[in-house]
Image (cartoon, rainbow, N blue to C red):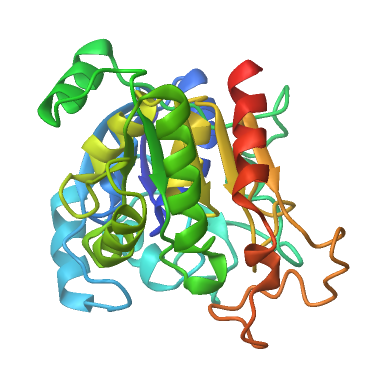
Length: 333
């Protein structure tokens, strides 16, 4: 049986979209260990096909040459194959330092020495699931979508820890690590939370990192009694479990959007500066709202962190009532 090491992407959404690759590798008999940065590693605990997860002790953006050598020394002799998912030079160093015989990845940032089985860099912005899955070396037998799983005990523990029960709350993830040009307005989230709370009598939990706590506080303040702010108060793995237990989820284009999609939760995703043609929520119960064609926005998708025109019409134009109708449709479906 092949012992394989997967070097994970550095973003939550990208980690989710690597699941079909992991599933294909495991299905053909490879025993998988994933090496991932700490803020991404929990995603792989929701993939049963992954046998072990190694948190990498690196900071975002740093080469840390000596640290990678130390990690590689611990891995030497343990793996037959490495799959390097990011395109950077630094991501390919550990398999090379560790002397793993087969090292697979894209050409990326000039890695002819570091990788010995290289795929050509695709043009443009390919769908990320296909981008990663291609590293398996053959086309998939059927269309692929990420699937994450937690057992009932994990869901019960996460929900009871915050005084909730599965299916008895809605979840919003109003932030986006990339920047404000991805974020549906806070006042729109507040209006939607008030309406859902009035209709269903259920709380709306607001999830995200500690950096998004202030944004979530603004939403909660504008929707008195409807929301509970959990941003920055849960671990990523518990936030994932809370999403998996929600009745419905509303997000921007973000990592937590992909988490909700992979759990198959009824969801609505509001797209602004990015494109659902590149990173859609791959979930038959997802509804996507994007105003590029409707408003004839020649600037979309701009893939900018902030709106160059200062108006973010692509997001402000998505009315709360429209998101609510889309969520109703997702719940009915």
